[in-house]
Image 1 (cartoon, rainbow, N blue to C red):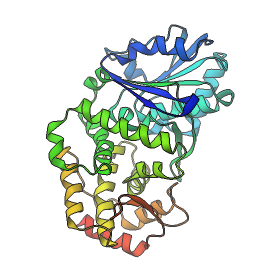
Image 2: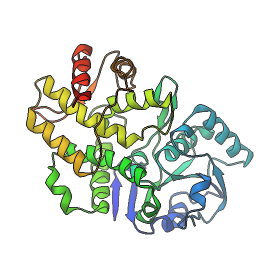
Image 3: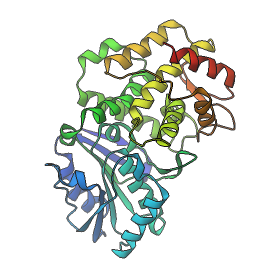
Length: 348
């Protein structure tokens, strides 16, 4: 299956299929015909997987950047750019990100900034990468002050989502990816009952279709694309607080699941939705096997401070929330209300 991200002359396809990685050589030849060399940005653990036979048809170098959210740092960007320069990668050449969302974020930002931009192709190998991170052109790394605070909008030449790579995912990584799936399912207004009728591949296609349509209409998050941040205000705060202790404490999708359940409760507290919408959220999240538990090791004061510094905030607390007219960005939410809802949510 191919899903197009329609951006005029910069349009590209997202390929969803078993063996999609084998289309890389043809994609390079078609979209980057002047390229002579490629770097494959990945991790050592991925190169040992049975599916790692990625080839560009060019002189290629495999660059190990580590794995997990810890790779998304300015220090790693600098190191990756230095290695690309040593290899004398030119403006005509290609960067290929092969890995989960953290690796594709890092590879994308490096491609966007090296020589002011070189061709990029993404081969996401995790569920969260295939349904979200590698699609739409958002690239970036983290600062101590928060997640994804340094980055660029930089579209790839194509995205190859190979379902075969998902077979080797650890269970926790698979569940983490379902957090973004839950977001898309909820944004589309679907009920939990429908989840029993769809496969993982169908869920990926649903999420990619939604994101491709939104990005085509709002590439740089001026309006509707902000809806894709649903659940992420609290999620990013959870990640910031946890990363100070341990980068492996919480996965992005796990944090998003908690953020989605909280957002429904905040919308209810603000009179935007009723109990039925909260139930729908809880049922969808539970049906996907995700937890919404908010532990005491995430103090409300720390979360409020982190949310106030989220990149989507406008010097206040800003959330994407459900309402009578659908989902929309709501700025200027009273911190005392947010705090009260957090405390009540924690006690459930």
